Length: 136
Image (cartoon, rainbow, N blue to C red; front, side):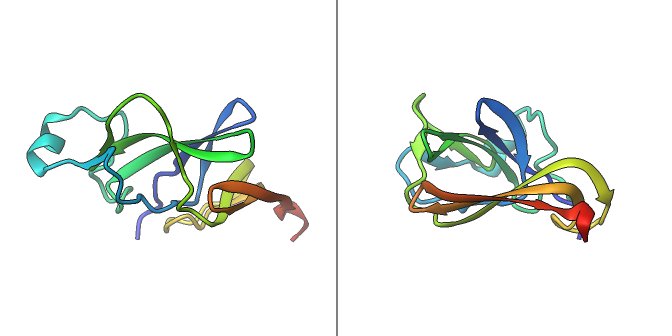
């Protein structure tokens, strides 16, 4: 498998990448695009390549300790302007930081100097931990 495109995350006002892919829920504001619609779109990212097996990239934001889905690019599209509170998601968000220590051409396996782990419960950030991979 090819190394995959990261999701986008805005955290503390800074856009960064995220190697976690929270699931996209069934929601009346989220529309699945047809193949014809996808062919007609011009994407900024190669969402229809082997670098993006999920065929979309989401832009997420953590604001006031709450996770929101802001934008979808690829096979999904958000209707309307307001972000969607990600109350369906519970799990760990992985945010790579620093230089690449070891590139792995598979999935999200590349190792960075540090990794920020954000624990989310029903859309609310309940904990965070920073892992220093230089010590390993």
